[in-house]
Image (cartoon, rainbow, N blue to C red):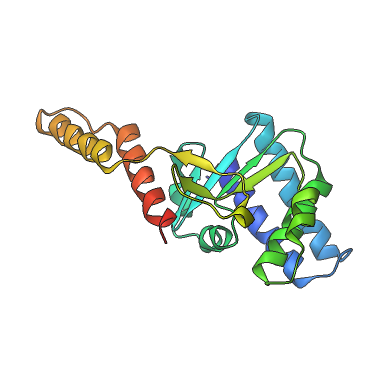
Length: 193
């Protein structure tokens, strides 16, 4: 049985594929958009601002990896076009979702788009950007909304040592801390491509 985040991302990917294949107004395109929007409404009825992160082979929903989507091809493709973090507000409309998907399709197909116009058209109910490591220098042209991760290898190594000590004393593995270490290391590795 799949979860609302998995259902939404599956419909999201199908909508991207349909938008890439069919012209505006085509029945298949409209059906895929309707399905993706309905899954998004289902998701936002449970969580006010669902947030996804796409880090290589990992898809993270809020703070937890979605194991069913490990190795999902769209995760890598979205990250490559500057969508490593994606958040939806409850106020999102079908039109905003369609504009956002069209922008992703344009980025995926390398169509020449005016990025200043794309930023102005970006719906406020859909926020996206790259995930950067705190302290990275950005060019003036790279004005994107980024999440910051305060990363130092010493803190991660200390956490790994603590996890090891917990296991040696017979305690259960604290999964939340282990997953946090993996996410931080993954973000650091992918942030320094």
